Image (cartoon, rainbow over all chains, first blue to last red; front, side, top):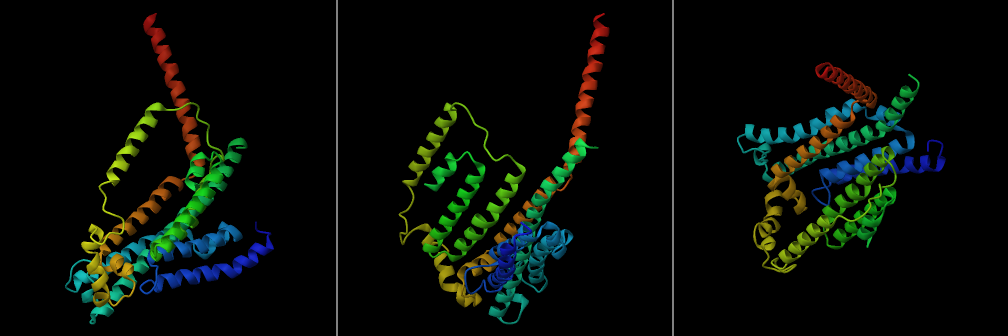
Length: 150
Length: 189
């Protein structure tokens, strides 16, 4: 598929748009349908399209596998950190009111931060799962070749 | 109709494509029902990512299902009885869309009326998911993380090593049998 010029050109147009749409869903989720889960999936879908066109090696140079492991835990930790911050400032766990002076501002800050954590986790987990499946085939073939010609 | 086609399909590639169509149809249904968040999720996850993952699995597996001969009568009876019980249970359900359903009179009205004054967030679904029930969403995030870790644990090691170990095991089993046979011969003689 690497030699297919039409696919490459269309993907070059589409991938930034898909990723922009993912970010829009992420940060506009309080006003229109959307939120962390959907945004993460859409962002990961853009990355998977990149993999299909340009190959896994190139895509792993953009977002290395190690970064995926770190980010997928970092998203959940960010979520928990917001909850613990509420406890530190004198509220309950995942209570957003103590975070900022204004009630609405505090709630919106809490919701946006928490959804961002969810979005990061979902996007990186989907990317990682796809990477593992995509790499399996080549590893398998290499192992078979090695079995036949050790 | 699509569901029947999925069940009858023996070509797994066709079944994966039909699953994608089924997801897209349900996404359209959710959009018609004004459930924008659910429709977006169904379209992105059901029609997009899970189709890609199914195709990734198919790249590793065979394309056609193994044919199964004959019918399992016990399974047929169990399925029929369970289905009949479920249909009987739906008779007790409240009327679809009724104003006095439990879903409409419990916490629903509170969320509808108070979520904007409480949060200043116009999208009620986001307010419920991220603030009123944020511990549920934390649990969901952990589920996603666990799923990622599980796939990593299953697929991260190289297949070559496992094969060699299996061959090693076979060798051991053969050795063991050999030893036992020798032992039996010795004890009988």
